[in-house]
Length: 435
Image (cartoon, rainbow, N blue to C red; front, side, top):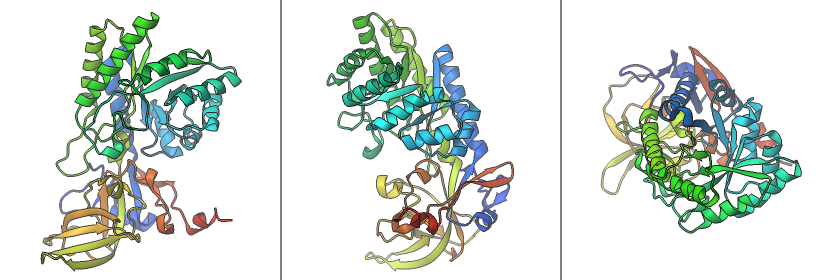
């Protein structure tokens, strides 16, 4: 959960740099990112995929939607894995970071014509197609410039993954992909085969996010491989690729579990191999798309306490409201998904008794609550620093300027040194778009 050092009785530090010094140099709120941890986690997923699938291992595509900037794109390039992007903006950042287009995969349920054309002209290896309309768009764009574009079809295998409704993506009633059960998946296959400018390479499925067991991934593999077999029988050739997406969960709270790369890939490989044997298929090239599992635990958010207020509840109990200088503009997940986080006093140790507290933001919303109920030291005071772990995924990437609050910076820490990789926004930035 922590890449930082939160040893009992000591101030929080990361790579030998204290929270106090980080706040003094870079201000708060700020996202603090452990570069070494990011690299290690990305390599761990890459190694687990290769060790489990051997010659049939495909590509680990880092899911850019979790968090991307040009510096992180450079790390992805250095590590040697691929990247999955879902908009023209994410594609632009990946290219600016120097990632080879042959290591880029383009996703999205409503890619514009300009985004598709930009991707094909750049030489993006694979486009994941999400609708019948998009088949025509990609085919026409590829034909215009005389290319044959490799594509995957995103399928919905009809799985109710054990996660929040807003981040479950593989049951039938969602905006993503082609349903296998309804026959739309087969209709999309036939539509792609009608275009000489498209090369169908295989299937893709992403069943959701923050999934902590392997059974859903195994069922997804089973259903996609059954469709591979149906394709082989119908057209006397086997599609060579299978992308089984991401969604591997991390732990946010003390006691939470985390789905490790070794366990996840071993289970996935076992399911893929068993189903290929069942259908007498060659092993396809299998790719995955971890995002949260790579970047989530590598980052924490550092806040400063601004106000403290004690409230007496109808029950007669007391609750302490601790307001920090960020909130739902830098972490929308608690309001959006009811996501749960923890926090620690970061600038000093405290032996004071713990008191029921609610950590809230500075925004003009009653729902601007980062942590609904947490036991924090009763002597926390204005000016203290609090740190929330595991904010690397969907913190900065979903950040907003609500109430015209500038978005925080991202500070990369490595080998005892800290540097800005995404600068703090200013009021001038906010005004810069106004005409």
